[in-house]
Length: 426
Ligand SMILES: *Cc1c(COP(=O)(O)O)cnc(C)c1O
Image (cartoon, rainbow, N blue to C red):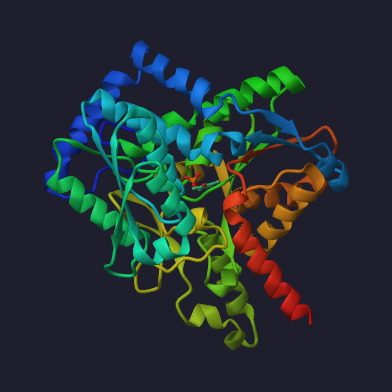
């Protein structure tokens, strides 16, 4: 549990404009009241069962495991949920909380549109007004999700300031919240933002780990040796990790390695620290340091800073500016990470690594071919790590991968990737 100020160790907390403090106080108070209220829990769990499609199954990836010739890989199938990913667990929980608080106007911001769709879905179900802020560049890139949100009755407001992407949409959503504090609730889509959001999101997502633990015991007769999940903001990872926090189970988060850490184009907030330190040692030992060009320029690296309401690890350039991130998967393409992950790494309870765009794509295709499952590109990063690890172990070793979402939304990206490699083959 975070402390009274919402800090996980030194991370997290509340760094917001003074006018938002009382609004956050209301959310904290309401959440503390309802999180243990049997009627609230019963309503949430009923909807998870009858609407979201929980429990999601646990699948033994038998052919993939046999192909790799080592550890057995199991998949927690969040891809089979309504709307196709784990985000609905959190959006629905927070929408229920908002309704209990008497707030009937919901705002949210979205980059790729996945959180916007989950929020619009929850609002339609509960009869709440829904306004989604989205950068106009993102709206053009993600037209089908804009259409989905509108079908679901949401108003999508284009944001034309700055780079016209996610961070500008966040600013606009906060501006809205400040000017409508009484009737409006802001749903944040990952284990991010000011207290109590990282805590709430973790609690709502922890159903993943709770189910997975029970299913492992029931179906396999024992716990996994390692649990692997991709980390964007960190919600699907913290959700599955929570089921195994007090067990002797290794917890592994996988960040977006983009074109590789040395390229500077990635979203690896943790791994960039380690990789840059390694490169620095190599550079100092080298006869020709000029070949380590990226370190001469501005190789972005995760450093502690205050970002979007919390203190956490943020990918920054050498001059302390928020770095531009890159990932083939929109859901992992983010400069900050949920504060609880920073603490889990610091105390050695979880470790964090990365998969590149190419490794994720290869894992995407492997899961399609060997298991008949088209995974989200985000989830493919976790699968990529399992593919790297499995051959190192015996057949008794068990890797549990959180398959956070399905890949239908990513078909265009994968198709254009295939076109590109076909062209370069010629
Ligand atoms: C949004 C998303 C993610 C990344 O978000 P987290 O908060 O890190 O879980 C991962 N997988 C899928 C399928 C997503 O839609």
